[in-house]
Length: 81
Image 1 (tube, rainbow, N blue to C red):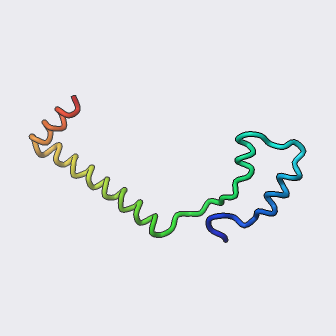
Image 2 (spheres, rainbow, N blue to C red):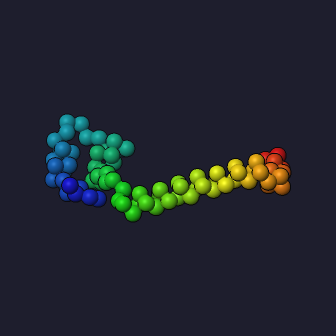
Image 3 (cartoon, rainbow, N blue to C red):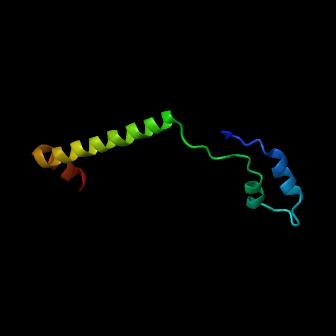
């Protein structure tokens, strides 16, 4: 399996030449696309997972502070006005 750009340029060019009616505008641009989708790598998955887990922990900490700390509760209440 190839990652990144596809090497099937010959087949794409032949398909474009063999069409009865040439495409115009956006459909032509999409037909000439030579990119293939690749799954994210292990490093990218780890980065996104770290961000999501960190934000979840930050939210849980905020909820705990909201219910247990009156000054933080008042601050959030006043910011929300």
